[in-house]
Image 1 (cartoon, rainbow, N blue to C red):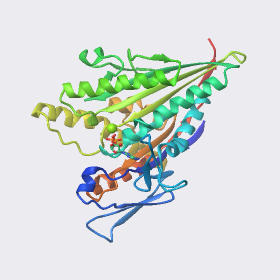
Image 2 (cartoon, helix red, strand yellow; image 1 turned 30 degrees about the horizontal axis):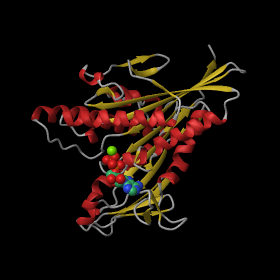
Image 3 (tube, protein in one colour; image 1 turned 45 degrees about the horizontal axis):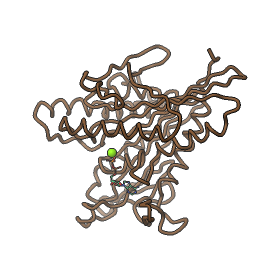
Length: 365
Ligand code: ADP
Ligand code: MG
C-alpha cells in the first residue's frame, strides 16, 4: 500500500461572451500553485488557497490557424490543453500501466470548463482523448512481453438512474442496476464494455455517447449539465513469461454543474430533480467531507458511500484503491464570485483525502 492524497488542480478559463458583454472584472489571480479570489463587494476580503496545480487559462492566448488555443508567446503564461495533460494525464496513464486504478474528476459550475478540460472541443482535445492517444502508443511500443486489452464504457447518471450511453435501449428500460460484489465492489450490471484497438475507435465511441447524451436530454427536456458523465477505461495486461495479469480501471468523470440547481421543469420534475440530481453531488460532498475529517484524525463513524449512485461507483476512487486527481474549474468573473468560492472550498476539502492504491495483479488464469 502506498498512502497517497488526492491531487487537486484548479483552472481558470477565459471570459465568455456573456461576461465580456457585461463588462466583467477578473477576480481570480494565480501565483505559482496558489490562487486567490477577491470579493467584488468588499475589497478587503480576499481568500487564498493552495493546490497541487493551478492553471491560468484566462489570458495570454491566441488561436492558431487550426483553431488551437496556444500561448501568445512561447513559454507564455497561458496553460493550454497540452500542459494540463502533461501534469495530470501522463501520471494517470503511467499509474494505470503499472496496474493502479486511477480516477480523474472535473468539478465546477456549468460553463466553467469541465468538459473543455476533460473531453475538449474540436482541435483542443482534452484529457480523455489525449490519454487514449498515449495509451495506445504505449501499448504499441511495448508488445514483446505483454498482451494488452482495452475496454471502453460510457455512462450517465441522471436522477439517480444509470444510463448506458453506448446502448440507447438502456434509458427506456428505466436505467441499469448498480450491484455490489465482495471482491469487485459496486458495478453497473449489464453495462456495455467495448473492446478497443486504437484511439480512433475510442474517439468514435465518445462521439456516439455524447450524441446519445444530448439527444436524450433534449427529448426529456432536461439539461445535460445536471447529469454526471462517467467514462471507464479498463486496461488488462497479460505478462506471459511471468504468468501475471494486471488489471486497472481508469475512471474519467465529468460531474454535473456544481451550482445550486434551479429547475425549470414541472413541479413534479422539480421535486424529483431537487432530491435526486443533487443527491449524487451532495453525497459526493458528504463523502469528501467525511474522508477529509478522517485524514485529520477526527472520529468518523460512517462514510455515506451507499447514499448515492455516484459515490457507490466512485467508492474505490475516494479513500480507497485508486490514484485520484480532481480538476476544479472556475469562471474568472466577478458575477460568479459565490460559485467560484464554493468550488475552491470544495476542492480544498478534497485535497485532504488519503487513498491507498495497490497494484492489481494476479496469476494469469
Ligand atoms: P462545462 O463543461 O463546465 O459546462 P465547458 O467546458 O463546456 O463548460 O466550457 C464552457 C465554454 O468555455 C466553452 O465554450 C469552452 O470552449 C470555453 N472554455 C472552457 N475552458 C477553456 C479554456 N481553458 N480555454 C479556452 N476556452 C475554454
Ligand atoms: Mg460540460
